Image 1 (cartoon, rainbow, N blue to C red):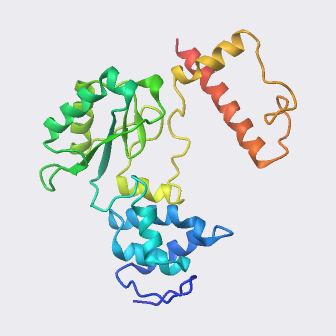
Image 2 (image 1 turned 30 degrees about the vertical axis):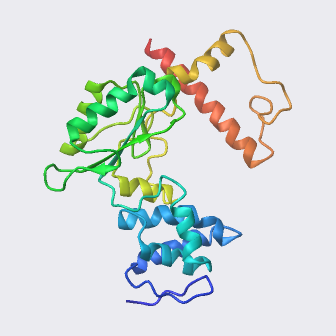
Image 3 (image 1 turned 120 degrees about the horizontal axis):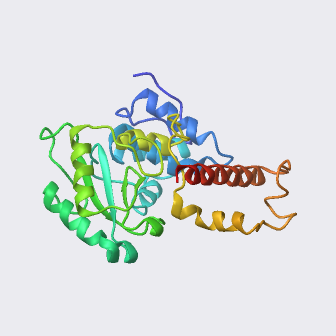
Length: 267
């Protein structure tokens, strides 16, 4: 295996990490003025390559960043998106926080546990279907206007019922292509992890980013002629942004308005 120099203080010793993955970990670290800031996307890349955060992946991140494996492990065990056990082709999360639970999230989670014959944070067996699923109950997904909500590889599946949830996981297990409610076609968990690591898959603008419930406030504002005060971060309509932040905010507002018009045109 070709030696890839480390950007940290140590020398590479994690031979089980492929040359390609190691080089991409270095690429991520190089994106930041302080290389350590790249640790979170680096861990996502490890998961995309290994299906979980492995000891070898932790060592590789530590070597590249010039920090201890204990520091990397502390981060990897703090955030629930980083897994120490293998994840299936699809990570199916069911929100069981207050509103989703009241609207049926608990019933959905119980139905899926029975249907898939797995418990929380467990994975369906290999070989029984075209794909495998890891099921987990999640805290708030910030989509209360679409409760009860599920997420598949962090893409929204809104307004679910026990019956629709069963149909969804059956389609996933069969390898059927599924479109998220507000987003792109669903990819595998490893593919999604690679995107979170900062390697786009070209699907950023695929599918709507907002739905009718999210756009109600904007619709009411347009009907009443309400606009944001001039001179704020958003600036005048049609004006040129003076900063990257303003450019992003203007783009987001423009897209939301266009999606509102599309939704209105469907009625």
